[in-house]
Length: 300
Image 1: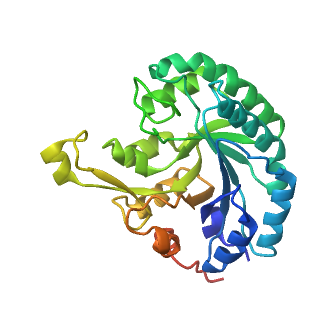
Image 2: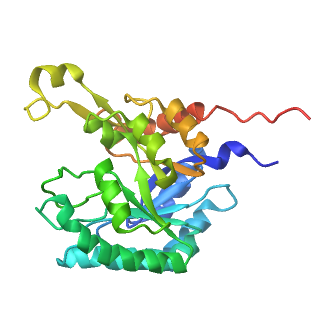
Image 3: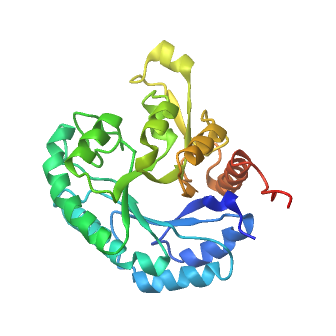
């Protein structure tokens, strides 16, 4: 019997160029993760993608676990050596997505460094226009994470896709149907944006969701603002932050979203280090509860 709860799977990200990502997958899957997002930081690092896909599929075995999304995080719009490797990584992941069973490649847009955001749009159109066509030919979608990477509208090194006004400009510049967002509430809370109205507005363009949250210390904001010495917000694992994941998942369902919510670990200031997997499994179980808990089939 099919399980409609799995229209939205709860999983986690894995470092694809770690020494042995397949061993890591074998270790964590018994905790109940339903999907994994293998990701790379700036470069594939010489990883043989067909071999990686095979070892990860072997690690998953006969479990009902998907690899819907692959990640490539860097700046493909610039021309330093690592930037060129990031762009080649996007191309390689698009070409090899089918080996993982992946339908989406996600990452940062990149940007023209240290220039106002809108000045990146011509380069964005040139690079991702080509990538979007390449992806469409292979039945693959492209999704941009909404992380500012400490950038702003005026300057930054990594990403232009961190603000709703930027999304409007991006999708007007490239209206391809297979270009969308990898969304999470964390970064919006860091901008002191309520993520819920934004989520409802942009669901048709959300291709993948990261399970990451934030806690805002409003007492610090009121006393010191957001540019003082005292941290005003922290990235959190779901279940430990301010977001209402029951409402988020409910709105995703109402908007027709089908895919995965993959936990982005290694950021929580409390559940890190020796407590990393403790926090991730707590987040996994919290998100499953917010999804509705254990699936109960209707009586005949």
